Amino acid sequence: MKSKKLRAAVASASLFLTAAAVAHTGATGVVKDRMDLMDRIGDANEELAKIMRGRVDYDADRVRELAEIIASHGGEAMTQVFPAGSISGPSEAVPAIWDEWERFSSLAAELADYAEALVAAADNPRVKGRGMPSGGGMASGGMMDGGMSTLPGPVELSTLPPDAAFLRVAQTCSTCHQDYRKSGR
Amino acid sequence: MKRRVVWVIAACAAAVVTGVGASRIVDAPAPSSRELAQLEGDVNRGAYVARLSGCIGCHTDAKSGGAVLGGGAAIKTPFGTFFAPNITPHDVDGIGQWSLEDFATSLTAGVSPSGQHYFPAFPYPFYTHLSDQDLVDLWAAVRSVPPAAGKPPPHDLPFPYNLREAVGIWKLLNFRPPDVVGEPAAAGPTDRGRYIVDGPAHCGSCHTPRDILGGRDLGLKFQGGESAGGEKAPAITAVALSAAGWTADDLAYALGTGIKPDGDVFGGSMAEVIRDGSQFWSDSDRGAVANYLLEGSDK
Image 1 (spheres, rainbow over the protein chains, first blue to last red):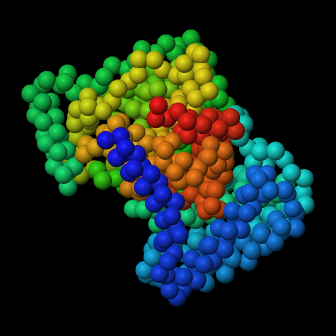
Image 2: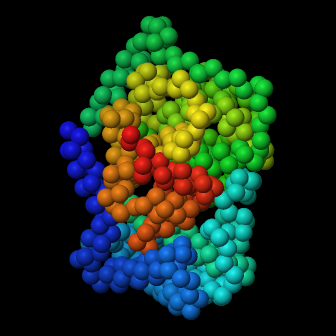
Image 3: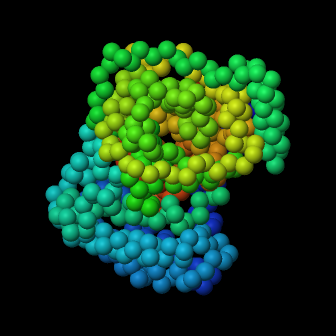
């Protein structure tokens, strides 16, 4: 009984891990194009995360290169691979994208803006931790600010540690995926 | 389908039972006795407890620019659509008339000031584990938010799920207030993580599968379930996480940033959990949660 549960857990966990890779096979046309685009952003993100976590030495030139990759895949490069109603085969896109096209496009534009802020911030001094100006402490969890609204924009981020801009890039990805990527319904 | 049938039977039984006046059977379990009056609430600590507990995510309609804690967006579940209410201190639309005791009873017993059962979409089976100090601090923080007028629509639940009496039966089956609350006095390395995960952060609400009546199947704790909105929530047992390649450090980092080890980010409900909650946690709390999940949660 126990080993059955264990096998089930391992099986579902490995499914969880490989789902994305599997989902991208068999895509064609614009669906394939945007999956490739997402993969390139994901690869850059993966390497940036390793750098920001100190798994590899910090290299400002490499950070700029990777951030440029993300920036060049945001904005219009992103929106043009989402023609109306393009949901076919293994696509993980949801129709809300086109119902809320304005919000979707502005998130795509923000991705490019924050990635550009990371390009500009790459030489700034690092801080320990996640690099947000007031992140993580007891008092900073205050409820009055209502979340992201008071967080720094791209201009301010370009003057802060690169970790802060990187975090905003990742949060933009996450916000968009929360509403516009299928999540195993 | 099967879930629906059984629920109908339970609901009809509840309706019959209450109909004949034997309402004691569906009374809520007594709230654990809390001596809160002597404690001083700390607004900043309470705001942090709110981030641990996910209050803001459900009770704020962030996407539509709603006021903080002014009431949430629709949560569509198999039982109908829920709207988390306005819990700002507004006298009419919020909870401005509540006492600390009302607040504590709602969180720890799932009972409203007028004595009604709350539907378990409100995760009081987890909040019942909150320590006395955390409850008092949370109350101070909720009182500190500007009162916001307006409230979301009432829950939209088809019969029989709209029967609050049936929730009493649900509670008898599924709700166990703990004998001891809060962190153990001699907190070991995984105790803080256990407290956060099984109490305020209510991870099992989505990551533990539920039975046909919507009760958590605790024999399958963290083996994967569904979010309230019906998305699949993956298994987060130590075995499952390790098999998927997660380390405690990866997990702590992901809870702070939303970034997974492969460069992908969390979408779905977990994006909200991180954005409104765990990104504000201390490094040590994120580490405690990660360590507990990878080392202690199924022992």
